[in-house]
Amino acid sequence: MSTLPAVFKYQAIETFHSPTERTARRWELLSKKHKYNIQNINDKPGFESGSYLLEYEIWTQQSSS
Image 1: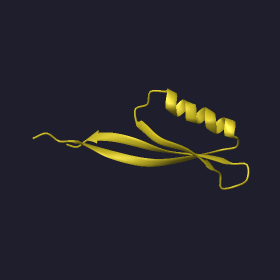
Image 2: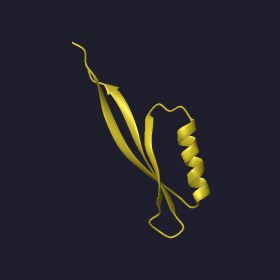
Image 3: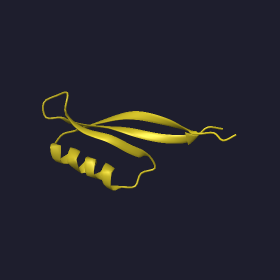
């Protein structure tokens, strides 16, 4: 009997002090090979004036045994 891997999704939100920092992080997430699958990257306004958010999903697979 074969078992399918379990898939987990995590929500990540990072805060930055400038849109340039946020853009640099976005490119880092998109350009590097990661152990995890990163999807749905969104720029959002920060909770305070002068802050900027980057929201994304981290998908992982773990084999169940």
